[in-house]
Amino acid sequence: MTPLVDGDWLEAHLDDPGLVILEVSFYEPAKASYFQGHAPGAHYVPWKEFCWHETDREFADPLAMADRLAAYG
Image (cartoon, helix red, strand yellow):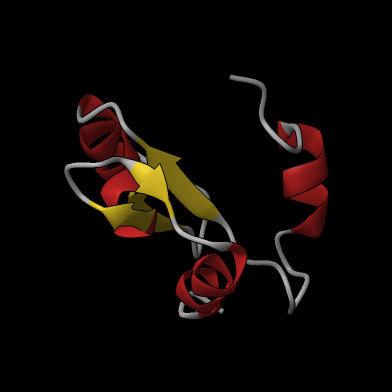
């Protein structure tokens, strides 16, 4: 998966007041690596948190997704 921004961009914008960093992964070991080291202020978000139904694995509609993302800032 390609990141939305690269490390240089992130480093240059870490102090931007409107920046919200989310680590969203379906790979469980990603949580362990998140706790070992992550960008300051980043949030670890389990991917299932964004699913409409945990067993269907269908993503929420745009309005529900916006509400879920807004909860992080």
